[in-house]
Structure formats: C-alpha cells, structure tokens
Length: 541
Ligand code: G16
Image (cartoon, rainbow, N blue to C red; front, side, top):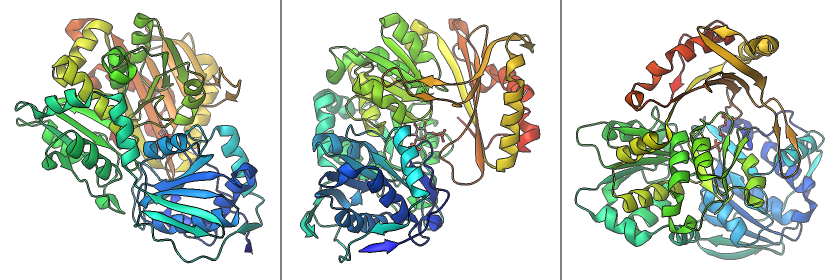
C-alpha cells in the first residue's frame, strides 16, 4: 500500500538517532515518515537482511510492528528480530556483523526516561554494526523534509514473543533469541573460568544493577548462569516499559540503590550498572567510584591481561570532553591516540580501519572492536577479568594506576532542560569571547588555547565543526562547554572540567574541591548562572 503523508520538521537525528517524547512518535505517521526516509536513502535495503530490536521501553512493540509492515512493503528480504522486540544496542551491533546484515534499526532512547510520557528513539546502524555516520543521518533528515508517501503492508501483527519464522509478502521474519549470540561472543573475549573462580571466592561479592532495563536478561544469562553469581547479586533485572519510573542512567545520581550499597560499611567488592539499552556502564568498588575516563585508561593499560586483547591493541580513542587519562597510557605504551567529537558514530571509521581497538567516552561508555557500539556488560566483564588476574580490589587497581600515570581529576556538571534561548545566548556570548580568550589569565590560570572543536576524520576526510567550546590552560587543565544532543526537553548544557595531578600526595582529594577554582573560572567565562538562571547543576558526575 502507498499511503500519503506530509513531513514533520523536527526529524533531525541528534548525538545518537532521533529521540523525542513518546507522544510525538505517536502522532500520525511520525514514525512511518522517519522509517520511510531511511528506506528512501538506502535503496540497497531492498533485497537485504535487517536486524530489528529495542530496549523494551513503552512503544517498542508498536514501533516494531510498524517497521515490520514497512520493511515488507519496501521489499526487504529478511528481518531478524530479538524475542519480545528486545535487543541491547551492543547485541544488535553484534548480530548485524554476525549475519552480514545490511544494517539494523535500533529502537531506544538509551538512558532517557521511558513510559507513556517518557522518551522514545530510533536509529539506523550500518553494515559494520555502528551508528550511521553524520553524512547518512543528514540525508535521512533531508528525505524526511520532503516525504509525501510511504509504503506499508497490511499484515496482521507478528507474535514477537515466540521464537520462530513467519513470512509477510515474501519477506521472512525470524524471531530469535536475543541473548545467546551476545553471551557467546563475551565467552570468546574473556577468561570465564578465571572470573568464575573470582566470584566464587567467599570474600568476593558483587552487585549489578540492570536498572529495570534491557541488560536484565543478558546479566542473568552471563553473570548468573555462566559465571555463577548469586541471583540476589543482580538487582532490577526485569525489563520494564517505564524502567520502574526511574532514569535508566548508570551514574551516581540515578543508580541510587547501588550507590548506597557501594558506599556503606557492608559494601560489596564490586558494583556496576548499565543503562536503558545496555551500552553504558558505571564501575564501582567498595567505597570507590571509577570515573568513566579513568575506567577507559585502566582498561587500555591492562588490556594485555584479557584473552581477547592479549596480542596487543592497535590504538585508543576518546571523545573530546573525555579526560586525557587514556592519552597518558597511550603515550607510555606507544599507542595511537585519537580525539573525536561526542558520539559513538565517530569511532566507527577508526575501528574499521584498525587504527584503534579500544575507545570510550566520559558519558559512561566504553567499547572495543568486538562490535561497533559501546558495550555495558562487556565493560563489566573486562573489569572482572582484570580483578581476577590481579587479585586486587577496585580501589587498589585505581590507586596503582594513578601512581603509575598520575591522576586526571574530572567532573561533569549538567544543567538540564534549560530554556533553549538561554542556552543559545550563553553559547553566542561564549563564541564572541573566544578570539580574545587565548593568552588571558583568569584567577591565576593562563588560557593557552580556546576554540570550538572541529574534527577532521583521518579515514574518510569528513569534517565536523562546532563540537564543543574548549578552553585549554597552560598546565593542560581544560574547561569544555557543550550542548547535549540527546535531550528531548529544552536544552541541556554540559560543563566538563579536568585538571591533571602528578603529586601522589594529592591523589586522594575530593574531586569537586580540587576543581573548585576551574568551576569558578568556567562560570566567570560563560556566565553560567546568569544565562541559565540556575545556581547549581542538576546532575554532577
Ligand atoms: C549517546 C551517544 C554517546 C554520547 C552520549 C551523550 O549515548 O551514543 O556517544 O556520548 O549520547 O551525548 P550528549 O552529551 O550529546 O547528550 P547514548 O547512551 O544516549 O546512546
């Protein structure tokens, strides 16, 4: 069937796909328009195999039924769909690669809240398993602005809960186990027997928080069934359409119960959490929080201890706002090190070209060349494998890392859902100041460089401008201002602050205290309080 439609003007994908309120997606043909725009930009999808799955949030099932009918009418040959419509983002990336699919459609708004009044999202991943590059998302947006028809079959709904095959207008639809392929992949990378011994030790206990989101079934299979962790060690493991009303965002603010347990007198040895779609991770030890930037650096420094990486890693990459801790490891080990804009899509070319093996971001994402997405449970297993080899606590691993490489004190302050005009004004004023900032001294700190970050992709030569305002100080300290590309209400200002410390006597200080002067300088430069009208940040990590 060919159905007439008219464009919506707000279908420009952000940092990671199109994210809007569920209610927006429920407007007539809103999802259909975007899906047809994907098909229109990629004629090669006709006759192809596609992977479909989502994080199980509200509207996931409805969206999948629409996509099935539209894929059939757009002459896709085969769809592989995770049982119950569920696939974690890294599992979807793996399936695309494993089945040599032409790509996949992933339904997720990641760490954003879910439920009827929450957020929903959709993104296309390419045949390498990674998020579509900016050039393609720009084309999809362009197509969405002129769309006037879409194709859709008039089939009855497919039973997403039963594993098996069916056919719609000549297109095969296979409902597949969502977990097993991913769990098998993890077994090829990590030393499961060694981790099994670690978690069986009477003095070792862990707590993994699946945040009522997609990693529940994956954690149950991998941590409980394959590694022998007790069922009570995995909390909030049943995926819920509204994530229990919480933000499925693994950070100190939103993983409240886990954080409470980890910072108590009876704290487990190891704690971790993953997000809505299973690609983020937070790592904790007893009374110890590992910043995502440090976690990436520690993984890079210890990769040789992990079976999947023991022959060496080709290089590392981090997003620009991520702390420079991993750069120090790369320098010491003689590895390539790349700095990309925020967004996992920018790592794809570097991974495909084998310039890097590991990459990560301050936003609780780490990953490697095993898939083309960041990967939450993979990071948890990486850490467990390190602990199993080193037989040390998380705190000792972190402290020893600082002793060897120094410590990059790091914090991120988020001012969420601020009036868009206020944030526009803040950035306009900041941009206007940029040319004069370099060379000036603010509160005894001299700014050596100030710009709005531009990335030149070394593989395909593409250029991405306006990726965040950075002020770099003479001693290497940095202040970065960015507008989030994943929010759905107003504008979110992110402030990132970093200071390197080489004196071991100063490794155990309070992060916010150490960074206080830089935070004041940031407010002085950008007039955050004045422009946002907020005295304090909403989330500090
Ligand atoms: C997405 C992207 C990440 C990015 C993060 C935060 O993560 O995949 O690369 O770092 O958003 O982006 P922003 O600062 O623009 O909000 P996720 O887990 O939401 O898919």
